[in-house]
Amino acid sequence: MELLPLATERLILRGFTRHDLAAFSGYRNKPEVARYQSWSTYSTEDAEAFFEQQHGLAFNADDTWFQIAAERKEDAALAGDVAVHFFDGGLQAEIGVTFDSIYQGQGYAWEALSRVIGLLFEDLKKHRIVATVDASNLRVQHLLEKLGFRREAHFRENIFFKGAWSDEYGYALLASEWRKQKR
Image (cartoon, rainbow, N blue to C red; front, side, top):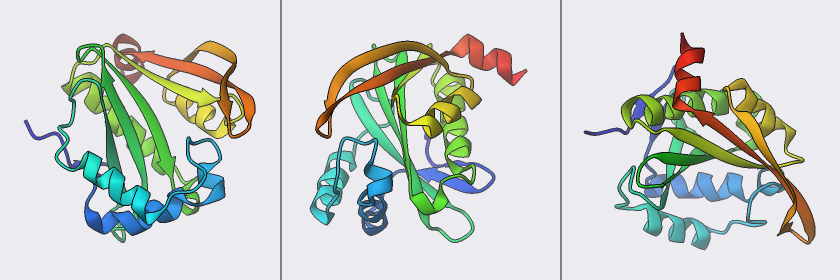
């Protein structure tokens, strides 16, 4: 079963191509995009290494992270990406999201995540999806809550991040909760 590409009203969600790498490293290298991410800078070499790791990776393979490119239908611009970590023998997934600052605040991340969550629950029959968010990242917290996720945990000073101890929140959404809110 071919799962990608997926379409939303304004986006095509698909695997990455070499053509994406300049835009990918470009937005990931912006300080406002990297602020809550594990990197501070993102070079062309980083993008190449990412592509080599992703190229040929099967979607929905346990114990892997798969990046989904979010391309705008309007102009084929790479707006951002959705990361999916498959784990627990195919029963659970973890998600993350990174969008170029010029496309933030326009509903693209919600649109992309909503479609990916639907795929994970409806087509792939995942039981639970989780996300970990920096406690200072209010925009992503609001996004997850808008999608129906609930905060399950507050991890205090659990990660030494960019020179300081940081708090993180754990979010989760069950398939049964997703189906209930879709009615």
